[in-house]
Length: 362
Image (spheres, one colour):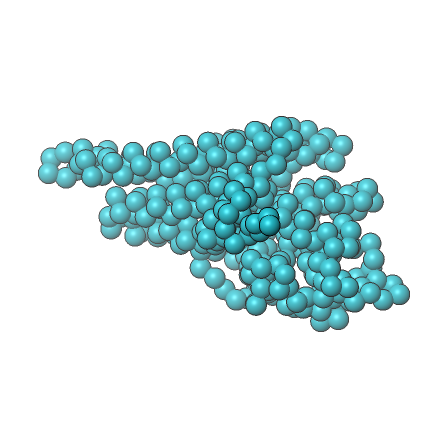
């Protein structure tokens, strides 16, 4: 994407859909995907660079969240677990954003604990019938299809559900603050019948698929947000040079210059973590630990830098048009999506052989 391209304005649900479609038209969705599947045939390093540029240009955390839900929630599960027929049927429309997707894991009573998911699927002669309730699902109001996780014969399994399926209701509530342009909502499934060919992956593979999707999301969602952090830092530096206090520019105050230095260090450290995830993926290696570390550090860094930017700009930081307070809300949300900071610490501890997820050998 070039520096001079203009995004459609943000606003209502229709505008959110149009902005995602616009990004698809700029081929932002095709990185790290092979040519034979309709992608660029490049790697995750190229994906990071493209998303970094996108974030810097749009400064829209909600759009970044929406794109990542579309990519890791529907496109990559199809690539990794779909049959050849499913790939041919679904991928072209998803890569062009003719169809918008995502995935539905969270339920009112089931957040990070996928074992407590209650949505269930009952087999019939012609397919399966889904019943359940999903909550806080990114892209729901604008999505055409969502990958919904439900229990089939007690085993967590993934199903492609279209908005037009009878018994499927994609809602636009409850409303949340933070990343507001990433539309969210509930999904109500009431005797929703879908054919057998809508099951993605094997019965019982849902847990593995969720882990794979969330690892990718944790690893790369902050590529775009790091672009926003770059823009944020540039705005603060520019303001500190122009603002005069007692005959000197604001940046001459050591307390201010130190905050700016810390913002720079956080940004560069985020990029080091993200690029390490890309390096590992391009080398065909696991990223379970690295992606959790990336998500933990980057979400906390985004929040602190957003608070510092607002503080440095003073009352100017409260002006709606400069986005600084909006980014504080977005950063608060970033500590929660893809698993909270506490969840990331649990994952890291378990992978290091300690914490609640570790079972000692006797």
